[in-house]
Image (tube, one colour):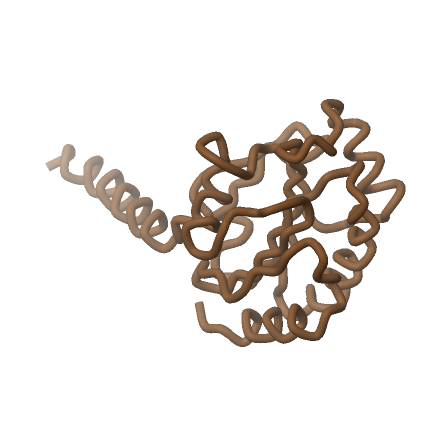
Length: 183
């Protein structure tokens, strides 16, 4: 009898863990190291059920001034649940090998407050899971500052090339659609 009372809570915990994993879309499976922090970002825990803009960034790209526009989007829509996730990458040879330098560009030079990861591969077979799924649902980034708008279910609503600025009406419209989506 005593064994049943011990096993029952363990069984309930296992079932709830499986249910939580089932609620996490493939896009958000896994953890990524947070830029200039000692903790990892549990993508599912932080972003599941939330509309997102995911963008691959590079500190020394000609599009780097878009950090200001991305921060403006973050400020404008965060009250409506939008999460902006920046993923620096050296896939196009325009990111520093030094995370401190990347952090300085993002946080000091451009005033970024949205979530940023350590540099990650975003193209090809080495790409992190997040960008593999983004590529499956849309396409792989063709350059730095490629933007993906993701709905509350973890599906890509739209993707935009580097030349699309964060204040572009089509990008804003896609964000509003993602915000209006149901989990």
